[in-house]
Amino acid sequence: MYDDKTGTLWLQETGVALEGPLAGRSLRELPRESYEPGIRWDEWRARHPKSKVLHCEHCLKKRPNHSSK
Image (cartoon, rainbow, N blue to C red; front, side, top):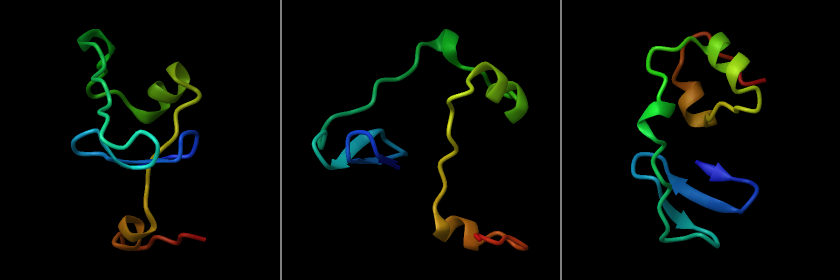
């Protein structure tokens, strides 16, 4: 995943910065009370309106009936 604000490329699986000014650093884990397993997107969006969905064009092209336009 890429952080536009810092210009850092992160490996989503490990949370380690691969490239950019934060290279070598790790993301911190959210506290357990912040986890919201099984929450629907509309509920999440209502609670966290500034959230963004991560995606890549390569992944989207694998989905049938998807248009990236």
